[in-house]
Image (cartoon, rainbow, N blue to C red):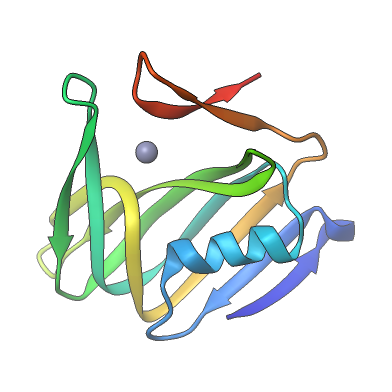
Length: 141
Ligand code: ZN
């Protein structure tokens, strides 16, 4: 993973290599650069991915594993903290060779060609806490 700060340190650009896993790389970058809140956006391609849908009734993620070359048509998400530790939440839309789209909560994505990710770093921290009612780690603003 290559990383470069732009905009007087307010924007972090990540360029991932083939075989790197997107969620863990963004989390590593958030830790390295001590980002306590921000937005994530990116494009690129994966060779495999695991995406999910949260079921609010069962309070579990239903996961789908995709094992094929897919374009990252859209990667979007945010950075925050939980218990003071970096926390990544990202969603993705992935396109196949016929232009069909798969989308959901991104659990993991292994880069197939590259991933070009921009992180806009915010100046104030955003913390999360687990909600028993919802079953997710929600922002506490
Ligand atoms: Zn999600």
